[in-house]
Image (tube, rainbow, N blue to C red; front, side, top):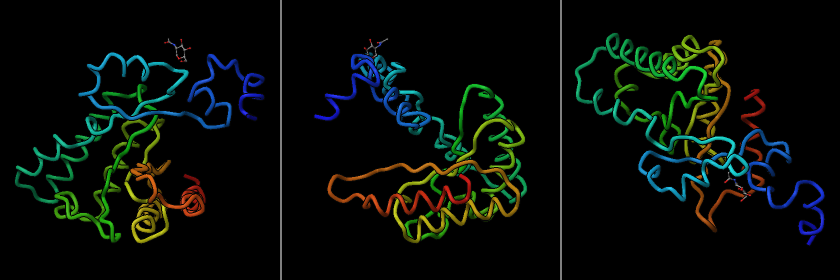
Length: 210
Ligand SMILES: *[C@@H]1O[C@H](CO)[C@@H](O)[C@H](O)[C@H]1NC(C)=O
């Protein structure tokens, strides 16, 4: 009832949609994720394009390196050649979209649930420093864009969120630019982390200035 009573005083209710309300509450952007396959759905695209509903969008998987990964996994690499390929990929992609993106997930899902590094071709060939190499290449290509580490199941205290925090700390220690953490919130109704746990974990990231 309080909403019904007071909301019209804040913003006219006809225009009071998700992004507008989020901004009024002090959130920078309320966004959504989408992918190329959904962009033929005109009803979806109309809602997604409505800036009173969504202030940003994140490509779900399309901009991630799935295609790149396959090309990479089919190759034969040394640490040096894969490092160069990684630097070229990040540099060229970031320069291509320079000025058009607010932020990049530079490294996505580098961790296993137990907090160890995923044994990806990047980890196996280059070692843990592939993460720093990616962030450094992006920062050099576009000093103004925000750079994030992104993963799932890092909203509650545990080995994985601690490991994600340690990635950020390690980058900061080596003076590598990292601006934020991407949390994917793949929540299941009835089994989400508690609000208290989510707040504590997010605060562990913001405590680093992220
Ligand atoms: C955006 O959504 C709001 C709320 O549903 C609606 O009033 C407005 O007409 C929409 N704008 C466009 C351009 O569709």
